[in-house]
Amino acid sequence: MSGRDARVGIRELLRLAPPRGLLYRDAHYLAATVEVDPAVMRPWLPFGVRLAEPARADLFTAWFPDCNFGSVYHEAGLFVHVKTLRGTGIHCPWMILDDDVALILGRELLGYPKKLGEIDWRLDGDRVAASATRKGARLLTMRGTLGEVLDDAPPFLGRPHRNVIGTMGLALPRLLAFTPGEHPIETRRVDLEVEVGGSERDPLHRMGLGRVVDARLHRVDLSAGSPPVPVRPLTPLFPATRLRPRAL
Image (tube, rainbow, N blue to C red):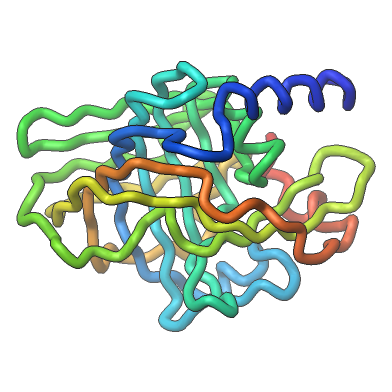
């Protein structure tokens, strides 16, 4: 895709998903907070972005039944907990999904390193199960039973983000800051089993992810929140050192 084509595509997506009002309705995030080995995870973070303490990350699979740009799709990804001036935020080093329109919107505008994959996501009564695969490799499997409703659950997506844009072109990559608007519908505890796999192109198994310490099913509406703001440029070597989980 040429630069002009990309700009035209982004303008069209912004028309479909305006900056005000709800962009997603009843989005479902099945999330597992896991321990992280700091020494293993640090090389996957952009320069100057530091792990929160204790070191944690959220593995998730998601289902989006209703959004403003007309897609119904699924995602799987990893949010690493990082330090920001506004408290604990998240950095996304890996994400796959099964819709090309959502891929362009999230990657070009917000720096989520989205790639096409296959996600199976099922909610049947109190039983929930999901799996994520890409190029024949099983990357993530989740199976669990829904528990009690959590009235004071923390936000899942609506936290300060520190993502990277500009990793695939000639421009310098840049660290991007933004916070989506999250409007809770219901959050439930989940008794969840998680299996992490990986491949050379998607090396989740090499990112220092450990045992599950908490698991929840978040149902939320989402709005644009604070607009994305470039924080600072990054070294041109960033795409080369993080290429496999972000682009291949």
